[in-house]
Length: 296
Ligand SMILES: Cc1cc2nc3c(=O)[nH]c(=O)nc-3n(C[C@H](O)[C@H](O)[C@H](O)COP(=O)(O)OP(=O)(O)OC[C@H]3O[C@@H](n4cnc5c(N)ncnc54)[C@H](O)[C@@H]3O)c2cc1C
Image (cartoon, rainbow, N blue to C red):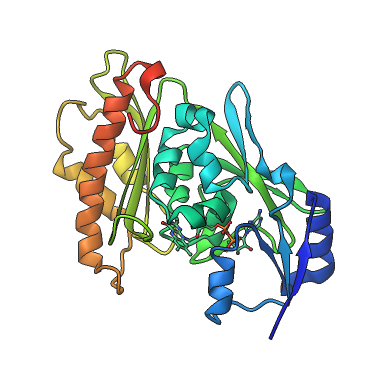
């Protein structure tokens, strides 16, 4: 069975099309998730509303205290943006681990987040940065915290008629971030576990003052590891993480066995990634702000 294809040129056209076609229509950005599911018979729809030509969704804008990242920004655009390399290096690190060249040309950050799968690589980063999503329908335009947005596997708080416009991402002066992922192969692969850290050190750069930690593929949705973040406060920057911090990280997770990895293996990987990612963030926090770009 085929489907109708609507090519929206503006947000308004996309929203009108969705309002008139209702549940049987699906938004499509890069199509690297939605079309794979459709061809595999795991998703049905009568119409596709393509967002690829909607320029309003494609913007990256800097404000004094945040960056607005449009939902339609492609993974390639993220990798090529000097602004994102400077201000959001953990997002660039996450995107650099994703898929292959052809896929990164098409796939978008908005599509990755709205796919709402537990292993989606940009989600832990955006959660650790304290991002909000901006959602619009013909009647509303509002912000929601990303923390709490995911209600289950492939499910979010977005209403059926709502379009994701983009993300409001605080720019955290004086704070440092990092991302790590373990997949089964080096590229083209979904995460066995992924993890993102945001932290700040005290004035002398010796002790962790505040932290946010988020991980994917260790529960039904990407998770905030709040107990580990609390346990990390007061951690001395030159010491390895204590067993208590590592155990606290496991306390918020609910890993499962599947063909990619066992629950036991995911727990071990989570602990290794936590050590590694906190260390990277600490190193970055101890580096002068001008030299903190992705990959450094
Ligand atoms: C070969 C391959 C490798 C991959 N590797 C990775 C990987 O390493 N890491 C990873 O996390 N994922 C990976 N993926 C999964 C997928 O490509 C990503 O999740 C990608 O970012 C999805 O973006 P998209 O623009 O193609 O989304 P689409 O397929 O267009 O859409 C995905 C979902 O989001 C919805 N949607 C899209 N835009 C909006 C919007 N603006 N408002 C509301 N809803 C919207 C769609 O309706 C759909 O439900 C891979 C996929 C393939 C095929």
